[in-house]
Image (cartoon, helix red, strand yellow):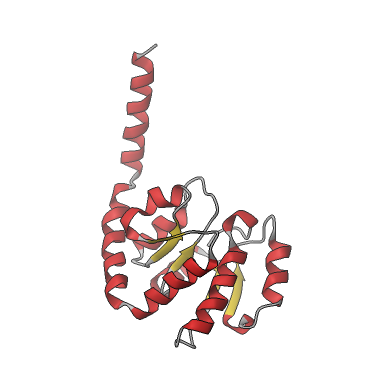
Length: 176
C-alpha cells in the first residue's frame, strides 16, 4: 500500500514472494500491490516481467478507501518492507482492521509497529519470505499480531498527537 517507489522496496517484496511461492505449500495466495506508480516504477515492472510466479501478483493502482478497507480485512497480512519511511500510515490502517503486519526493522515503521508486527531486514528478501511463510503456517502468531495491533493502534490518536506537540512547544518555550 502506497506509491510504487524504490524506497518502498517493492522489488525486494517481489523477490520475497518468489521465494515464498517456492517454499510454501500454499498455492492460492496472491500478492496485491496497491498504489500509484512513482519513482522507480519502471524498474519494478521490469522485475515483475521476469518473475516465475507473476500470475500470482496483481498491481491494482489506486483504490478507494472502501476498497482499501476490504483489502485489509481480507488480507493474510500487510507486507511493508520499506527501506525508509517518514511515518507509515498503512501500518495503522492495517492495525485498525486487524490485519497482521510484516515490516522493516530499520525505519520508523519499527517504532510505529512495535510488537504488533513481524520485523524483517528489508535488505534480505529471504527474511521477508520467512516471515510470510511463518504467517501462513502459524495461526497463533496471526492471532497474536491481530491482538497486539488492536491494542497498539489506540496509542495513535489525534488527541495524543496534539498533546505531545503541545508538550514539546511548552518545553521549548520554557527554555527560551
